[in-house]
Figure 1 (cartoon, helix red, strand yellow):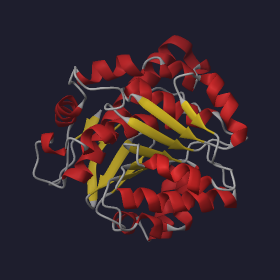
Figure 2 (tube, helix red, strand yellow):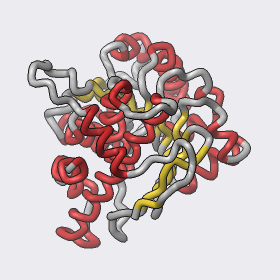
Figure 3 (tube, rainbow, N blue to C red):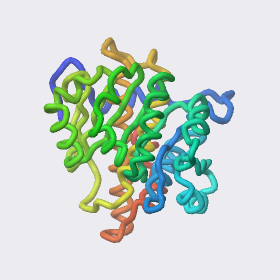
Figure 4 (cartoon, rainbow, N blue to C red):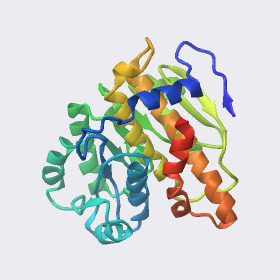
Length: 303
């Protein structure tokens, strides 16, 4: 159930539904790409599924185009998973920064981390991308191995004028807090930093306080790839809300609120997908079983 949180920046389900409805693309004259061009930075020899799940969920949530920037070894598997994803096998090239950076100007939101791996050379390139994303004020979601990189260098989060969403599980959250000196130290890195702590009860911390908690829906099944579905969905909603901040009916920090609303909606939808897939497949449920329920769960959420 959604829990009532006290505080000037607390939000509830009805506000989120109203906000997503107001911000979602509805103009019939728009052209391809205007509902969202999402970038996924990740994908390595061992992990080709994670960027696929993040990318396909962004599309299923309503984005028009997804570009995946991965290592060359992951490109063919990802292409085989889905023809809808645009795959760039550039992340491990010698001039990755030169080849990938120009693409950032075309993107509305970026996810860093799914299947990224922890190679030092990859982290060096991604560190440069974080700086380029910051300069371009592109909304950013950081998950998985991207969080490991951030934990080692929290200064990378400083100075962002666009929203940054961190999506740690309990263990990743504790590592971040230990490095930052506690939850307050983590949020103090910037007013545009939003932390979505995943678990039995999802919780968002933003604007120096807890904005909401929820344990609605879901199941006892925790399958690999579910977090990637979440991060891709957040990216789509983050573009919609940040590009339509004037439609958020509130007087609080609208950039931070856009991130919190996006997290709330994505969490609710992924939990619905989990419950539906579990009802069908039981303990044998996989993340691939959840993907098909994203559109239906989104429609149920906003209605």
